[in-house]
Each structure stands twice: as structure tokens, then as C-alpha cells.
Image (cartoon, rainbow, N blue to C red; front, side):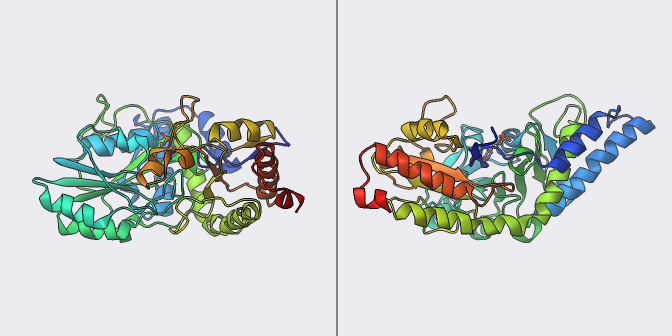
Length: 374
Ligand code: PLP
């Protein structure tokens, strides 16, 4: 795999060496964190240290953190367990939010992927009972950063709770849960350099979340089951390193913008959500007239791993609900590929992608000869 280029860090990013060490060290120990003896107390210590590191990354009170089995579970816990009557979710949320509660209602987004704040205000004005608004920090497909502080302001005017799916944004951009006034936030370890299969729901003190898993009294009685101590140790170590690496992640916009500029020399491409502030590591870009399915196979043959957004879990690429909500027509949406850099990406990765892009585009016969020569 050494010659291969991995540009799919939004799907999952490379586990950081410090997280691997933390997982291994924790696995070498014996002890259930609920046991009161010294072995149990050591396991408990590992969990509490990780809570501190994760709280520090996102400006949350460590005591408010509930460990879960993944980001999907955290979103389900928020969307099913929060003590509210109505649920409003933006149209471009991840399926882990969209599918979590059949009662949830959609809030439209504009062509730039930003949530329609007037629509949100209207929905909350018309609601009876208590509401929860769920808005992601940054979109996994386009990287578009959502206007969370405006959403919180409007929600609070209506006494609504706000949940933020920060799975993609955390570790890639600074965020402070307390300053923003969020009530709930979801995180996932494997998106920021920790292991897969561990996540967290941060639920502000005083909010009673009805558990989905029932059994023991772990995690403030809101998430039964012995905690994944090793996974949590890796999550904490990754969060610590991600906190120190936020500036480095912000620098990735240089490579992202270079990649876009180089492709624009070859063809009139569309960058989805381009007018909005976006994650520095992410670009979702069309290849005129070439389906994402064809591109993915060709990029794979060229040793480059990218993705077609989130809608290819069954192996078949379908038009993305995110791009559809942004008003993109189906044909253009089906030509969209997502490139996402990560903490360990290298300077030449973007150019290797562009070189492969040029070859794939040329093979379709769509590229003008003049552009090919340059
Ligand atoms: N939310 C967003 C925005 C995501 O991008 C993802 C994963 O792609 C999830 C939630 C689900 O996280 P997990 O893979 O930990 O279940």
C-alpha cells in the first residue's frame, strides 16, 4: 500500500501512533472500571483521563461526556433520548441523524449548504411542546461549516435544545461547546485519529437522556454496558494530539485550494459548497460528464482512495441527499467525488490526485487537447 495515496480521511483517518500506544497499554491491564478494587480503579482512571482530554478538545465539561460505541450511537441517543416533543434536523445531516428518529422534521438548506435560519424560526414558532434542533458542525461530504451560533441563538429564543453532530468537525477546527451554548454534542474517535468503534455523546448536566441500552448503571445511567476501556484510552490520546494539531489541520486549506486551482486548469469543474466556509481538509468536486462510480474505480486502479460522498455504503453510488438538498441536479451530483486530507497527508498527495484526475478525464474524451498538453 506504500505507493497508494489515501485521501478519504473523512471516512476514517489513520490512527495516531499515540492512540495505538494508549490502546495497547490499556489492553495489557485487567480491570473493570466499575470494580472498586485497585485493578478496577486503574481502568476507571484511564476513562476519566480520556474524558478530560476530550472535554479539552471541544470545550466541554468532562463530567458531561458519555462514552458510546460510535458516533452513530451518540446521535441516536440524542435524537431518541432527549426529553423533548419535537425534533428538527437539517436536510444535509448524516444518516445517523436523519434516520435516528422517524418523528424528526427536516429544515431546508440553501444552495450553499447553509441551513435556512428563517425556516428554522418559523418551524420553532409553530411548534408546541419542547423542541430539539440538530445541526452538524461540518458536513461530511462537502465540508460546509454550519452557522451553529445563529442556530443556537434562534433555538434559545424558543426554549429549544440544540444538538450538534460534531463528528466531522471536531479535531479539524476549533470548537467550544460551552461558549456556543450547545446542549448536546456527538463525537467519534475514528474521525480524529482514534480507533473505530468508540464515540461520545456530551450531554449538559441536568439533561436526562433516556437510555437506548438498558442494564447496568454505567455512564450516569444513560448508557449501560462495560465501557470500552482500551478504545476510550485511544480516543483520549487522539483527542489530546488533535487539540495540539488544530493549526496544522487549518493549513490543509493550502493543499485543498491548490488541488482545486490545478483541476480548474483542466476543466470547468464545480466545487460543491464553494461559497461557504468549509473544512480545510475537504473538497467535493465534479468531473464533467464522468460518473463518480467510474471515477472511483479509475482512481482506485491509480492507487488513490477517495470517496463518492456518503451514499455508497452498499457499493453502489447513489445521488447524494446532501447535494440534492443543495439543489444540485442529479447528473452533476452523480459526478461528485470527495477528497479529504488528513493529519498525516503529504504535500505531493494533492498533485498525485490531480495527475490521476487529468488521465481519467482525458480517457473519457472530454478534455480539450490544449489542456492535456499543459
Ligand atoms: N456523523 C457524521 C457527520 C459522520 O460523518 C459520521 C461518519 O461518517 C457519523 C456521524 C457516524 O460516525 P460513526 O462512524 O462513528 O458511527
